[in-house]
Amino acid sequence: MVAQGIGNSVSGLIGGLPVTAVIVRSTANISSGAKTKMSAIFHGILLMVLILAIPGVLNKIPLSCLAAILFLVGYKLAKPAIFVSVYEKGWSQFIPFAVTVLAILFTDLLIGIGIGMAFGLFFVIKTNFQKSIRFTEMNGNYLVQLQKDVSFLNKAPLMKELSKIPNGCQVIINAEKARFIDHDIQEVLNDFILTSMDKNIEVTTEGFRYKLTQTV
Image (cartoon, rainbow, N blue to C red):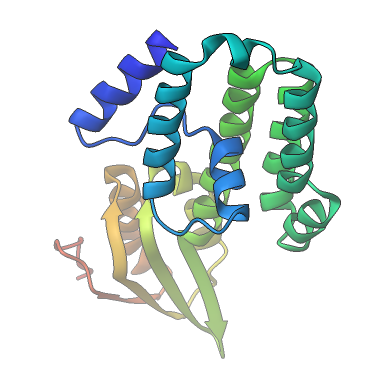
């Protein structure tokens, strides 16, 4: 309790969220009609008054009653309908969710959350990795779109796709939606432009914040 109080106080002083959000209490407040943070503040004040005024009575509350409340609130937080809802959003949402739940059940809360965060981070990177570069072909003309953050992780797929472009084509490389382009990606594009003359490929660049190598 002391550690949680100190952690929440320090976190709040530097503009952060509470270290422990106490989801059961928040859920109970919302179920009772709470709409503002005042419910949490009132809960804290009421708890402090009761601890100071009637600690003996509080100790007489059967733990089985408290456990029953936790089981009921926990079921509402993880009822089957929620699993179905997350599953319908796709595997990238369902797998981290399911892994987090299972990891918490078979280990403990902190380890389970850590494992869930690792899986979630993997799928975030995987999603961004797939959406960073888009190739479009129409009537022998190619559009290469760089989107969001294009990191060195995209270097190998970019080289592979560029090598598939046949001779005598027109290629547009568009970077208007790219916020960051790694130096390795710039080198790949420069090498492609330099060798495009040998393959009779006409390259046009759009939206770059810097000047790529130009063909002569």
